[in-house]
Structures are given as C-alpha cells and as structure tokens.
Image (cartoon, rainbow, N blue to C red):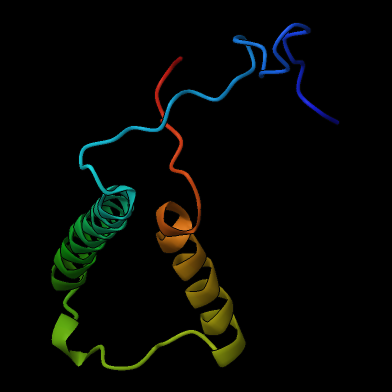
Length: 103
C-alpha cells in the first residue's frame, strides 16, 4: 500500500510524510555513527544499573556476586539475542534515522 501523494507534485502528502532526518554533522555517516554510539551508551547504562541492583540483592541474600562466572543462556537463545541486539544497534547505520519525537 502506497502513501497518499500530492496530486500536482507527486510528493508525499504532508500529513503522512516522515519527519525530516535529524542532522548534527555535514556528513550523514557521522550522524548515523552518533546514533550507534548513543544506542550503545544507553544499553551500557541500563546494564550497569541492572547489574548493581542484582549484586546488591545478592549481597543482601548472603550470596557473593563474584561467584557468578557461568549461567550464560543456552547457545541458540544467546545467538538470537545477539542477532537482535546487533540489528537494533545498526538501525541508524543501515538507513535514514527517523526522528523519534512528535511531528
């Protein structure tokens, strides 16, 4: 199904046209790499926060968090998770980054 277009110009109708891409640098590749870095930074922050919470709960329960050296998910589940993570991480590089805010 195609988006509505302006009959006179053939351009996408203003109500359905995607918002303009956010730009911070003259080179769009740099903008996309900034998107990758910001996605990684947010993932790292979330992981740090969750790890601190889990370690605090383990200490309170009398368990030594340093003793956790295994417990990795089964191979197939880990591969699916890694593939989903990489796909999410590379979204800004693989195409135009769409503004996430309101129009």
